[in-house]
Image (cartoon, rainbow, N blue to C red; front, side):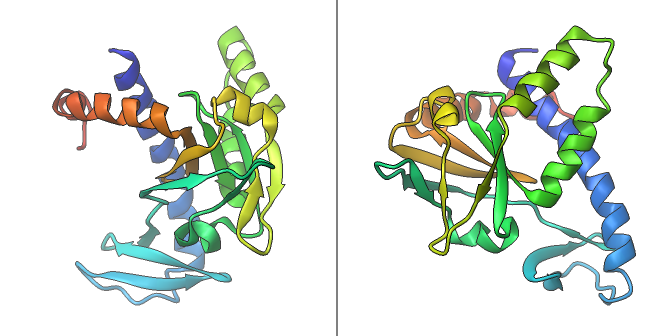
Length: 204
């Protein structure tokens, strides 16, 4: 399994765990409020924000953040978040290092779920300890201002080699901020390997 395949596999594992948490939450909070409809995409209100929903027959599960957008940082390191994601993200987010030299940006509820997964890692493994340590040490809670901007910490900008142009990509429970050129290289490489990747992942 090459590096790209391993990354895709890890993301699928994380999304599977996240879906299980969502099933428990949505079943408790949404099942009585939302009528059952088959083969129908709809929009349902959850808290103070609206989420696109897809009907899985027994209950409705939120569709994660998706899509790719090009943005620029200003000279202070601030970036306007894509309008599509602002209600989903709330008033503040948590940003930390991503596995692929990018910045991972979590809404607060998803960050709490991610913390739970980190806490579940084995403390007997040095790799698990090191991964948890570096992710948490690099985490920053960031307020979203009235113009929909966040100030990207310099430490994270340096890690992701971000200076100005970035690609902001939805990845289910989080956003990823990439150096635009690095993202295009990664994306093009993944496109070339897409058939092999799909064949190597069950359930696709």
